[in-house]
Length: 296
View 1: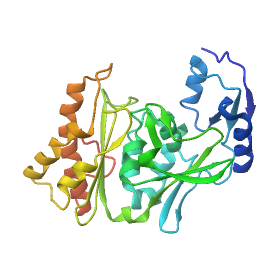
View 2: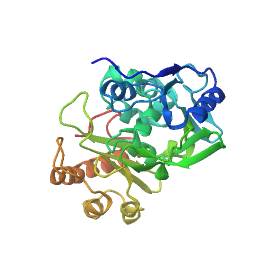
View 3: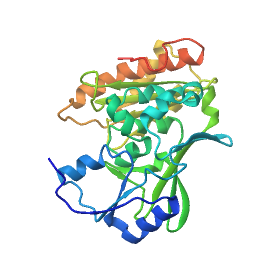
């Protein structure tokens, strides 16, 4: 089906020029980066912007680089960029594990990590991983720069804290996460291009402080802080894992839809959480499956 809606097309050469266009056009502007979601929405008539602002030509937005004691991931970084980055593979391998499980190779070549969280569907793959990495979203708008913690980024299904006229320029994570072990467990109906029925991200530090986040089992990806507190300092014994499982229903609110029932999601989260914790701890201690391995 062709795109029937008419709109202006603009391709700014700098971040400042892009922000100026967004500020002038306001809610009538639609940002185009990877386009895997935006083009489909345009085609289906789900959005009808006055102007599409293509930011793919802006220098610096496709960078993955150290930024002091933090890691910077630019707005144009694709999932394939994460997979192919030596810095990601060596220092932030949980990003790699998540990225290889996203859709198909063709989608990974185009879809951006920032676009994934800007679409803000509850099943977005990047959400749980950014939550356990304590990511910051870097934003530039008419009022200048501001930073939003990933905990406050998702405000509802397909809704974020991004305001009219603003542009996300990238993400930042603390380099302290390099010392951690992690895992990303994604449940789908089949291998290949499918949205998550449920997902779990786990990060564990050398002193056994855990970070756990869930996706596709609530209105937004969610960090399970009470669960984390309950298992803090504990190795993954059967008793510890039993305690962890008890917090799943408190942290999540799955629904029944075309992909799975609420009951199935809740049951599978118990399995996924146990496998995720065990894999993360094993990797922390120098063992476990290679990053990128399917856990379920």
